[in-house]
Image (cartoon, rainbow, N blue to C red; front, side, top):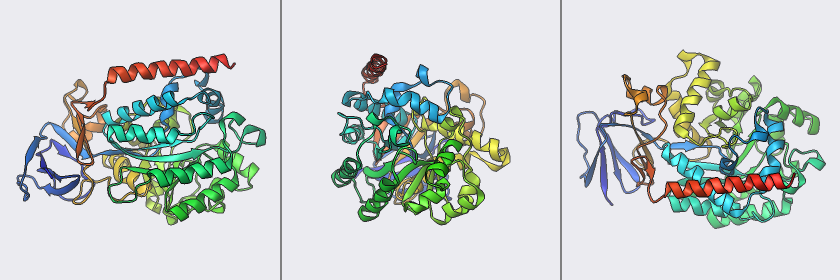
Length: 454
């Protein structure tokens, strides 16, 4: 195994406390040493990377996304709408997804995230029309080709609009089909060892798109198979009203009723909790993926990050879908999280360290991982390196703060599992021009299919 020294970074955020101004030593796929300022490694070094022009961080970890939505960015029929109306505008469009669209959308989302410093990506794919039954298989294939760490959540919708749900009938599946495929995916792809590159979680879409029976069955399977669970919860007041009307429960009470209020669960958005619910969530060791850009775009509200963390909730960060964020840029999302949370708590109570923590160890912990998220001895060698040579950084003084305050957009180098996957800002082995051409054609074809069905 080659031993590599990332030497004397311009600045470094490890997520831990040791002085590592002298850099990081990687051996194989693990961090084996943090070097103090002015010191040299204790390990015998095979190769040195001069990091003196780089800000070094743990690889960023995306805890919530919808890759397929890269095909419907800035979609005209969905503009200037809030969540329920926005979804109802887009469900009929997304129902036209096919395997080529799914493959190219996944690849483009992953490449976009890798270029922004992301080393672990989670995706919540819940829309599986006829002909797209192997959507998650296609996603696994794309991630393994690119060499990115991935957590794919097998999403589902079983409650159609004719039964009181939100999605149209042709976008849902039977519960038997959902359960059978969930078990197939776990047994085919879920890796349980330290450093797992591919994992599967179970993810009914939301209270307004699945039945209570499916939520309960998912909790049972997740316990039996020892996998994580994921869903949207408390994103909007409309969802709260839906739960009260249909189930007679507030969303957190419903979560407990169906067996989800436990450490296996992480939630997307998690905005509209009262004080008592915040404490219950913390006691249950729930994880939450804060999705700031999406929450602003759809005017959903602001997650209560500080109170949730203080209560014991594991708070991470997600870009959410590229139809509500219109991007898949993780380092940009870190900046957005810092600023949105400052709007809630004040500038003195949210720092760039907080935002970086949410995007690294916070996301890892939320999704049940303790082998990634920090630069510490024994952790996986997932590392992002950013240069501050764009005009936006000129005149900046604190490099780590400047990474967010001045608005970094792209990583220069990215290492996943001890392997370089991004170099000079480009994903190794990807013809970006060809990928963009395929993706644009797929997006146009999807829109044309939707127009033809009107």
